[in-house]
Length: 128
Image (cartoon, rainbow, N blue to C red; front, side):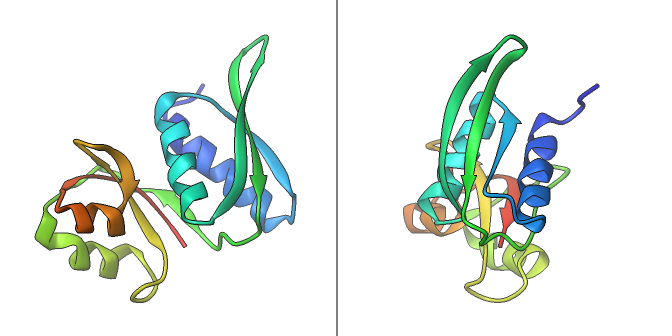
């Protein structure tokens, strides 16, 4: 039984990257789709597409081999516009390495774009 579909999807992607596979399949929902879009925009994955099967929707993800680690952040901390550096230090290995993925009032985006737009939100995950 799945308790956190986002964590399960990110684990499948990370394990496929570590074993050198070129693609993987993860369960589909809006949040996972939004996070995959952010990862694609920031060059962590090549492409992804939605596929229907008898058990519900799935995403086929084409991997680039550039992900070292990615995890869900729990609990989903609220983050203010002036707190990005604090959370970067906590979850990312070095300055300007990696991406915090945040749910904002303007949608799901990376922390760099949210910082430019002056938006806070909730931390969802990180990837580097």
